[in-house]
Length: 485
Ligand code: NAD
Image (tube, rainbow, N blue to C red; front, top):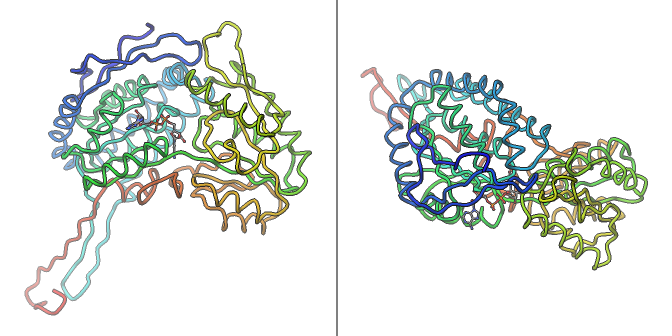
């Protein structure tokens, strides 16, 4: 085992869970054992919540300009530790070093946004009638929880940590049991940055901890990022306990390619979107709809896709189960009559025979009823459908239950505008394969890709992590009493 067993982080200290149950943390790169992660129980969560609750009065009363000083220092520490964090991310998640480094760069950008929060939460004040003022303030909620998936071991935790904490909350983070190591390093850096004990806590585990978070009476808000199946469970369970909840789910992102799209640029963007992070991105292009004759672009996509070599510039998928699931989708599509133009099944990487790799896969002549057209595959696979008109393409896009992202590749501005308007997704790209909005713009999908109001990052997250206090004040007796006051 390369690293010592992972521990929980409670009240500023790494401690063992009370439960003795654990799971192995295996590197997807070569199948080697990295660490063990405890399957904590509700007693561990109670301890973490008690620490967070005790830290809250002092932390929430610390002026926000002081609170964000921690995140200025944390940002510098992320920069200083970029290599170590990137190596850890690649080891536990399987993505390439370049992808991991980009993930840490994004953490830096997210933290940078949090340091700007004092400029964004100034509240409002107005003399609403003579001598009477109304004023609003953003007030922290208390103890909040963040439950995160495996595919971005550092970035998704950093979607929530800097904003929620800078806004005055104390947090319980539940990492993915598949990739707990990056979160432990994040805890160390937050402590080094001067975050007071108890403000940030980690409880490792799986279903039991997630359910306990949803049920815990002292947790005010739950943010979740993961599959739609679990997002629905978490949203229902925490809101039925009267908590606020924002639950981001899975995706099936459609790219619409029009015949006037620039072939090379389109092919490069499509191939990068489908295979980046081995297709394990909720913003990955997963279905492509060619409108009219786009055969020349499909050929270029195949050539670009083949440049992604497993173990070189294409990382591993998270585990054997995922590898088998992805390959099963490809085989099923083939049996149903789709054409596999680039086949990533049975990928082997010399010297890493126990790694879990899938090569880039391009499937053409997919029909909208096939599973590869409808379901989230979460691997480096693109399913190509064909239509004669943009409206037929939009019908396919609109009929899919998800709504994270959609993109169009065209040179026609009017057509692009039409697709922006008609596509049923929260984030739209024009000639962009991965249309992730950068700070200060917020991240969030529609439909079954997100449950709850608002977005998880950017300015929109301020509403989620705070409640508004409205005060009406009068100091001059001569203002009298009228129907308004
Ligand atoms: P997952 O839903 O399996 O797990 C997410 C979290 O929920 C983990 O912490 C896990 O321990 C916990 N969990 C798993 N099963 C549970 C259950 N039955 N009850 C309660 N908790 C449970 O997701 P994953 O496989 O880790 O991540 C991949 C998924 O996340 C994909 O569907 C991807 O699209 C999605 N994702 C979405 C976004 C977004 O912004 N919409 C971002 C990243 C990932």
